[in-house]
Length: 167
Image 1 (cartoon, helix red, strand yellow):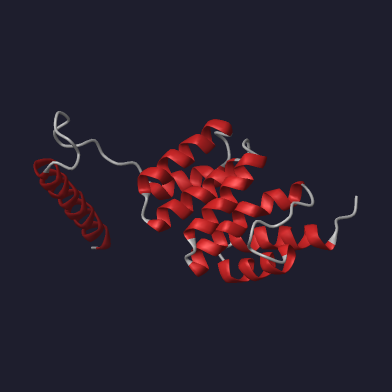
Image 2 (image 1 turned 45 degrees about the vertical axis):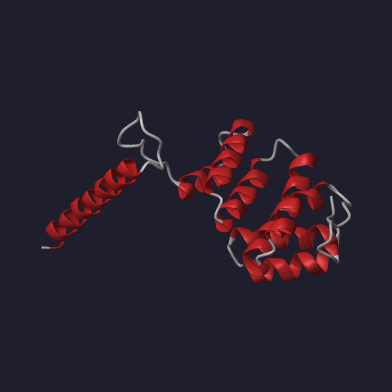
């Protein structure tokens, strides 16, 4: 089965984005779709490229609203594709909305727990430790102070291990 020039461009754009060459990916997608205003969907491959296109827009242009719209459109068309959720989660994270990023990636992993790209984004986001005092809110100044002290201790312990190994 032969692929069209359009499908090849979308595939190249996806590959560039996965390599984190966002500017190159953005240029390929702009050339393929012709516009960044909700491009026409010509095939399943075109749908697959939408969330990657959105990620490129977010990373290069910092136009988060438009990037989120493209990812949501891709999710509406392919709700089972965890890559779309991974791209949307990265956009939320870069935008500074870690909570929404975590919710999004968890939803994506429910659809495909084995998706390596989604799992990598989940690892990137990290797992927060439980609050020091569980009966207080995470944002309570006591929990914040204790959490900072706990983190400082972890960093100091890691530095000690590194220093011992280098001797």
